[in-house]
Length: 412
Image 1 (cartoon, rainbow, N blue to C red):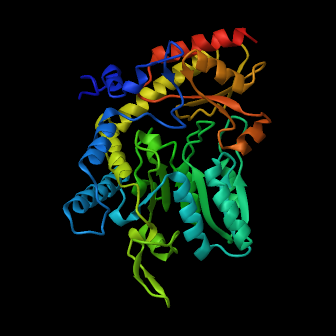
Image 2 (spheres, rainbow, N blue to C red; image 1 turned 90 degrees about the horizontal axis):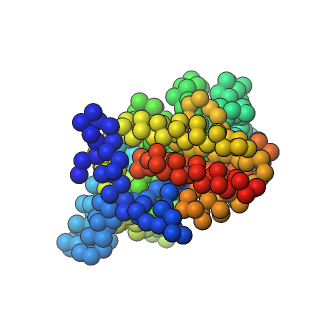
Image 3 (cartoon, rainbow, N blue to C red; image 1 turned 45 degrees about the vertical axis):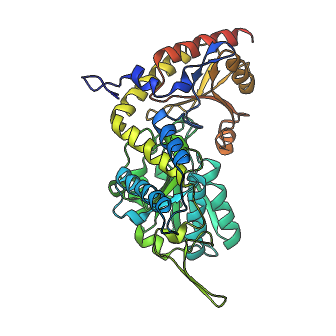
């Protein structure tokens, strides 16, 4: 399995063979999959390891002494080691398995918030957050009579980080921001945000759902306090993901859920909790899903995230320049520092109509408000169409997309 040429450029045709789902027709047209920000496809290597475990049998982890349980436990915990190395976490117990980014943020909002956020305190998020990084904090603030404050962004989609200095007060307890916007594509200056916060001893959570598959992340170098990502965004199974948290914070937090595995001892008088990371992993997890996630991370690591980022940036610039040649197009999010997302509207066509007609031509994009209502409100639009590229996309995919766009726009 060779993924790079001699000059370390990606061997796209070899990579695409690992994704047979891309080699199909939709409505008798070749499929062009440009909805990668919503979910990525899975390589055959992930499918094979998942299928192998279902075929050969599994046992519940940590709870039995038989062969299948031992085998499943070793594979499951190996995934924790792989994620630790992938993020360069200092301790393996700083990796908590979750269903995805959404659950990870809820875990922190609940477990951290119930200990450290009280009446009159403040939580800061940004205007460009996914609902998953807004609603959990709103719920916390409602429960504890705290205040949610917002870092704005400008009309180019650039976060106004200078506003953070005036937003931070002695009542600020945590800041939670996205690394890369799922709508604007903006790559936020998270290092600057973390540095500003830490000057006031304020912890920072990073939503890396749109970042972990596009750029290398070193949590020790970032010095973030929490970071979350989803497996299905990085070519792994749905229903998997992880939370990284600094050990000193995780030890002080309350458990997010109660049940099996997260306990040390239970009586009707009181319960003592398990050690990290199991304190936050109640119940039977998606064992085989995490085995698949480990394989997905191994897959992208073998290719190299630096090579992936360089190629996707090339595709992004090409797609952007070609899309702007289509009459009536306006791109939403024009930050000079962007990842592989292009959200756009047409002066005459509704975004839903664009998506529906493009689908009939074999082009899969996203339409709507993308679980980020405040962004649509900022630009006073009902929603947008969104094309998002991956390293398995090609310039030929972009050409087919642009040709389809021109054809669809002519209808309006």
